[in-house]
Length: 266
Image (cartoon, rainbow, N blue to C red; front, side):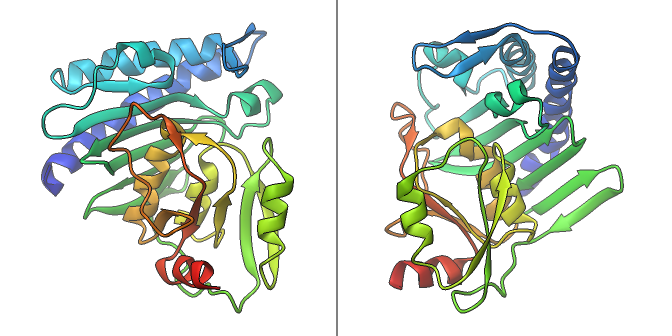
């Protein structure tokens, strides 16, 4: 898709994400039931309600494009002949939602040939939207307006890095990786907002030494790319969404290109 087509889609996708976020907030502000899925992860009525809105709206917007959603995996038959499909997490950070700490998001991405070419990340409690599309730049939209965002290209391995990490997922393996850095300061954050902090330059590095699924990362990945950053596995290969039948991502690193290259060589 060209930049004009993506720009036109972006306006509608922002609206869809925000509509789903409004429904999530209705549920967030009252008591809600929490179920446990087969993989032991939590599921709330907010996940289901947001999923319904997003699926219906995306189908109306682009009737011929397939949709892979965390809450409707069984409906996905694969990308179209051009390798294009929507990749959705209706409520990323369900654990944060249950804790009511506000650090959860609605994630909607458009994938083409394995690359996220458009992404919208909406944080309903923060009333903040992150957007990015191929050759169109990245933006943060909040109550103060629209702001162009970029990764911090001055961050390198000789400086004290601001490293963003998960509030809900920590491990000895992650700590062992961090211990290899010369100097760093931890910034804790939930959901796909971790990638967005790197995209807007408020963090320098996000190492994910742990499992995630495709829908956890795709939308924010698009924002990072549009902001001039990169998301690669630990060997330097760009994170790909070309084989959605394999829903798990490898471990990965997010930051500016020179920093990630230097970390691999270090």
